[in-house]
Picture 1 (cartoon, helix red, strand yellow):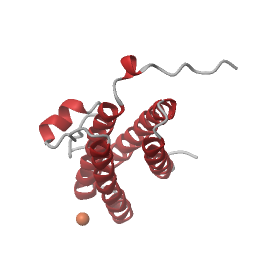
Picture 2 (tube, protein in one colour):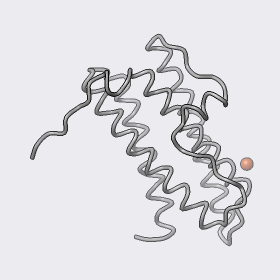
Picture 3 (cartoon, helix red, strand yellow):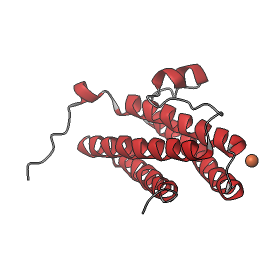
Picture 4 (cartoon, protein in one colour):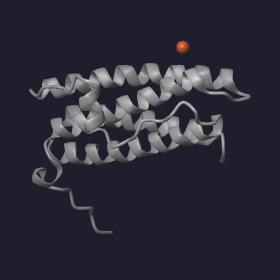
Length: 156
Ligand SMILES: [Fe+2]
């Protein structure tokens, strides 16, 4: 099977730039999760309330790690909500969604984060930046697991 071509740094941008986008998307998922932790109305409310609390706490710690990795690579980390919303590719969610829609929205967000993590791991490895690829493998494992936990609400 042919190996996938790894894009050059010109095509992909620098690792700190890619991490800034990933940080912004992490914070969008953080706010979605917080929003749904507060506003979900569902028969299993308490179970989701607890699960989403675990998830938003993890995402907050992850955002800190990603921003600090950007600083280790000698770049400034974005530090305002305005910048985050410009850098993010995921969109915020309204609090008016029904419980099932909130769960679907989170499944989609975590699956997107898995794809973004995967791309960043491949790119960091091609650049021999093991510090970044190691952190991103942790991000991939987290988002993969949360996508599965939430997806199991609907299907096997
Ligand atoms: Fe709470």
